[in-house]
Image 1 (cartoon, rainbow, N blue to C red):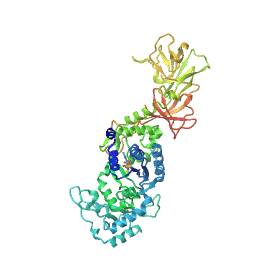
Image 2: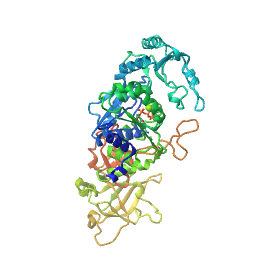
Image 3: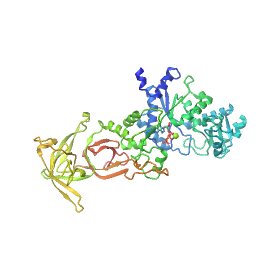
Image 4: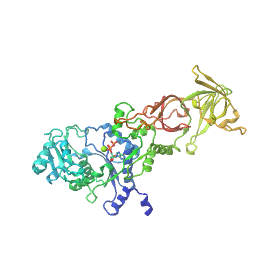
Length: 552
Ligand code: ATP
Ligand code: MG
């Protein structure tokens, strides 16, 4: 038992304590995305943490869209977010909610605060409120409207609701403490006027609750026990608790349950990788990337399209751990996780990305033989296949050199190499075009070396892969690098991104084994000596395959 505690993260230790002390029977968590963009790897951490806790403690997990800010919200994002969360394996069952579902209750809660003398309508502009708020070293000043009577406030708030005021003309402020050392507690704005059409409630409302007021109420209404958020909300916790104490408590469905408890953890950052919605949105809008799911991005949709698996992302998030200390993980760790996951899952195939023809002069014209190949040497369960072999093959251009340097063991005139799974071949000659580019290499094979085995104990140092030309399937292969230049720095001085001009390489004339002809979107393979690849679900067609390199 003692040992078990050691491996628990600090949030689990809080939960254990809450259960032990009888504050709650189990946990009820939520993930509260704002539908203003696609989710990224950082959100995956929050999703897996929240849903994972619910699973571990046999509790519940809600998905709740925080749609209190109608300007930026779009239905497209709602659907994409749902798809991403499902794909990660987090299950909200029948508990899909929208903050806008609770606008009536939030309005009632605000009225209740006014009646208790704990909220008032202010005439100050946003700038004036900022001015009156004071600083870290200076207390704030009382709002001139702070002395309004309850009746007057009730009437004005109703007028706000009824559209009598323009945007910014009036706000509702909580009456807490203008001298508090915590600036968030200096009579924060809790309702604003905004004449905007909401994607779900239409024109019903022209006042909208502020996040710090809405969020604790949403948690209370849904019976959330542990409201897990990121570190930047730590200073907002006293306000969260104030709202719960003043009006939220009464909204909790099960009166025996504890009020929601806010717990903060550190955001996940990836070193030299762009995750901010603001930046990604700009890349998308300026057409620099192919949408939010461009495989160079780390949105969940992009990672999926690139070929990452939910298991690899889970593993990555686990390795990062949950803590209060801000830190940054390397992209290389994400790559490690996908390699680990695909190592035993992905069939190992042969593909030629930069082809040059190899002709076996002494191989019978028109003959094709099928050679048995194990699909994955690390996983017998994946079985084996037969790969066609013949007189004309494609090999990688870099596997031949006219004048090799020392320690080059691949193909060059006079040298013998092994064609993987096939035969020993010895290079005799080659053909060049008028530009000096090698167009064809000629060799002879040793029929006694079938399977790539030495017939007489003689050794070859190089083994190269190949694809038989007549049966090869032509495919496009896309290679990726970081979208930003890590050497020069991710951000320019003016705040723009320092783009890497080589982030995408498209190879249009690649040849893959015929066994790949039926590959479909999201199928992953290891291409011998080239890394792991995944069929691009967006651009790949039945007769025009497109592969993304996931990782080298
Ligand atoms: P961004 O910083 O990309 O704009 P956001 O915080 O505005 O993201 P929300 O939709 O508000 O996006 O976030 C939903 C939840 O995801 C919040 O609870 C937030 O704390 C959490 N979250 C956001 N970014 C990260 C991150 N990098 N690591 C862990 N959790 C995160
Ligand atoms: Mg946010």
